[in-house]
Image (cartoon, helix red, strand yellow):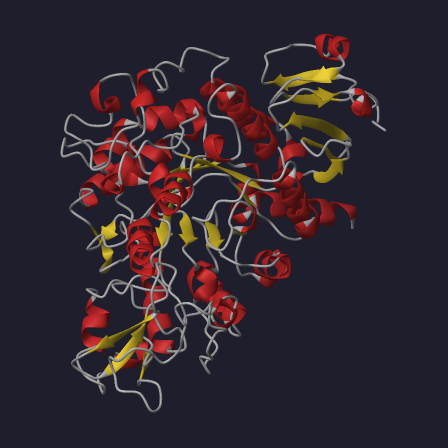
Length: 581
């Protein structure tokens, strides 16, 4: 009996290899340009694989490279089984997969199956007539009762798009509206149609058979809608409202995810499934990632990256001291041993972590490394977004013309129409806009930061003259050096991958301290996430043992205990020799 349980545990650990893994996200158009046209591509990624190997990551998550009109930077797919010539071809792709696998790195594709491009053949057929066999592959509805199609307020519902404006666009040829939760060029797929789902599953199997190791599924919790399509509460200004209660975590979401697992992943090993889920609750995340339910391996949730939002993401609110640690703790406690979370502060949709949650001026290195320490050593799978490992900061955008992102540009245009304070709006876009994450990766101090020989598609951050990868490779105290240590620590320490999480309280909410424990192995992590010194005495009873990692570079606890305070953005990882209080 004991041997059987032990064998099952080992098999379970093998099946959940991703608990010990670190994921690295590549946004291709901004990573590295291999053909000199100013846009990142697959050849550029191939050239930079040594960077990934040196960092030690286990998985590359590749943002979309499928054929696309690029209305939303590739998240509007026109051919799921084609490579956009902007990025290369299948010879390049196959070479990249082979090279990554040779270096023990898996490749996870970004997959968008909530919607397609309006240039996808499926949608072209669907909109061709009301009786086309693919008409029901998308959401089509008549104008609101009593309204003339095309007039204000005639949309079937009053939902507001993620990219501003209504979620419905009139198709003049057929006289009906189609649903798009994002841009008008991104019509939503109707997952109620079984033929559509069969086609999607077939496409996913095709990629896995080609050597892909899994999928990060974009806004996957939006695929099930309330069939009644009720109106939302209007905002009192535009007449539009938040329809998310009727399309987030919908009534058939878990049925669809379970079916996907059966049809695509059953019988396969070594894959990874990540569900991006805006607005997901802890309860829904538990259902989605409980291994017994066979839906997803982990969720990608957004609650902590909405802490500085006011009425919208561009309405900036000062982050309350301790708010980030408080929210991260909430998710640690909520998911516990059953659920699994993606640990991240940055991605292609978020501003740079050190500019948003840290101090990208006086304490740039200290805050970049403290945030990384606090994040990577929690329970969950950590993600590194390209450039985060060298501490890249928000971009510099001198005017609205310098922005490229459809979300930001649409918001600014609607703000102009609504007569809002444009200086305040521009400030919000500069702080929280997605273009901050999309400036080219800073490889060296040369022109265009070593990203391209041609002018890049979006401006390079001028701080690349000192903030770049080349300047950090040989410096163990650099941000890159610290990230490398964090990756190595996760690989060699089972307590990080499999241990429990318990927050250690401190009177000052800026202190994020916690203990991890697994099979008698323990770690204590203490981070001061603030610009000020903090009294050490409330933690003295847990500050015992050997220093595993310090972002200030101290090898023992003696200097810290002698000071009796934690310095700004100081992070220490300890291996206690006795059970801490």
